[in-house]
Length: 386
Image (cartoon, rainbow, N blue to C red):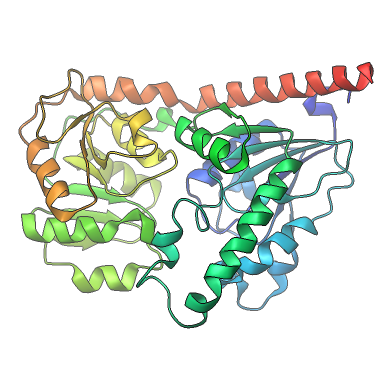
């Protein structure tokens, strides 16, 4: 391969296009960098992603043709390895997968270069298996088949990692998982945050805020129970599979508003007292977004927030320049302690925003472009040396 990325046949591969979350924001930036690439995915719900992504040449797998797949695609997990492997990569010299499930398992042609931007190794079968399929989380057929299915998926996941020439992790946290599960090294490039559309806010309307999909590992249930007991107002932005159960336990101070458009979200970030982040994320763009507005983050002290939030631990001596508070255990008591402790601290909104600007979108795009160019150049030298 002796030409630059903008002149070669390029494919982007993303697990599924069903909504705009953190992974899709990374994909959107890649689409802006390489608008001439072909975009492959398991399933595409038209209109569910940004105009930049929708404008790409999008090609889907056989999963797209399954009648109920648009809403229940997650139930088709056993089919995903086969579906991703059947995507036709024969016409492409460079493949860039954006993967948190099976996208990195595509089969490029032998001479192609494959770079994987890894949001995480498949969390359903590795680090968060119990959160999805542990006791009380699954029943019926799922409870019976998942133990054996997970074993098969783990074997496939490890084997298919060998199809990747270079891994890029979205955080040091995920870098550790890639090394642990795949025995591979990875560069680290943090995901993009569009800091230009945010603004510093010193206003507080007294409520706390959650912005999240309602997946089990997000632990929104923990926040609902804690704020029921605290009697503080909690505004929750999002939808998802746990919505019904969450609303069933919510008290009068908990407000669900569904997914919010950018203008509404801007107003909610600007007016909140702090962001509540009770789950463990691979990286977590939402805590960075909140900090862009000068808002502190109250988070479970694990995962990506340890890289993005300068947090002191609840109940301990305040950390100088803190941009948030960490709690140690995912319990109602520890989260309540962190909220109460945060209310005793005097945060500097301007310093919080400065911390978030480290993750500006431009930095992501420049870093990715430089990494891809270097990988292509190294591959070209390797080809010439053979």
